[in-house]
Image 1 (cartoon, one colour):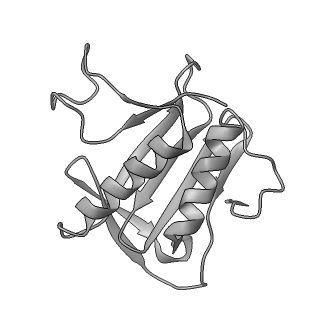
Image 2 (tube, rainbow, N blue to C red):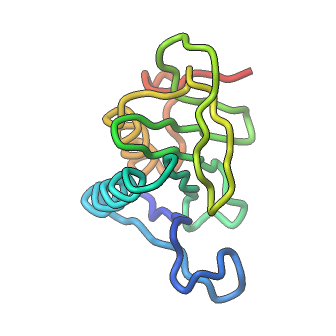
Length: 143
């Protein structure tokens, strides 16, 4: 099981500057608490939030996860040296704006899935040191 480095709502708020601490997740309980907090905060703002997740011990930060967390829906995109995989929900055309540190980012609606699926994908990311098995049902190759 890996320790995960998460970038979301850093304290102090000087994102990605030297000395800025990442949130470190080591257990499923900590992961659940973080996702609950992000989802609750997303409910109070105009659009859902994005967090970025890395394996803390990997100096190159691969594979990385970009995760949208809303109230009932979200998405996960895993970027690795071998390609990109993402969650796939209903075949819906269009985009939803997600918030990444105060900047809007359009995410295809077809990538949104129930938050339970987002949780399962991130639990697998934690359990497998960021290397989610190719046959994991919650992720699909993105071309």
